[in-house]
Image (cartoon, rainbow, N blue to C red; front, top):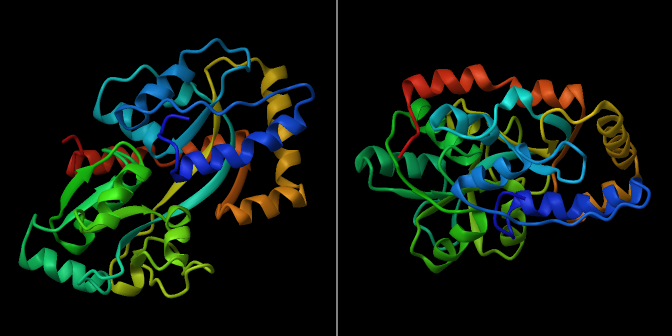
Length: 286
């Protein structure tokens, strides 16, 4: 797990682990958090592990694609073994319940009046939430102040404490705090409103044509032998058809979009051209 405990990636991995162990006879699955450099440290550990099936990684898209664009890393996205996507989690913007910003148009108006003054936090440079914010800035013609953290759980403390104006993270990460009325949603970069948070308008409803989500799944190192790959893929296919899994994912607030094997690989790598085009316009190195 290349991010700190407590975020959406961690929730995905820890919810999945016991089901994966149950579908692989004799296996024990341990989630080991190895955060650092916006996910680079943990991703490199998996990408350079022996291809024996004993070390797998939690994969975040677009991060697995965006980091090699912005800086040298020890993996090539096309060489990784994409096993199964579990979640597609829309990006959004959230504030404390007492924030002066009531909705996305108000935040954008403030950003236009004071370019670079409104600060937002993300889980890291080049991650899904940062990319979504660059697209938002470009589409709305505004400039915001990015404050990167080492995982979503790290930015929640200053957000809830009032030191950070806006948090950019995913709807699954927001749901517990929304239920407690600790935060409010300003907008969601989704095709439609989330069934669990119907009061949060989409960016498109606010006049900004941006749709962007985090893909979260499991990958292995390059060269994972076919018998091992097929066994793990079959285990995920069995998990995704298990009603107990659906119930557990719902309790964890995971917005499921299961993909196995080649379908996951195609989805994971499919956004690379758009990211390179964005980099040419708005390089996100900071």
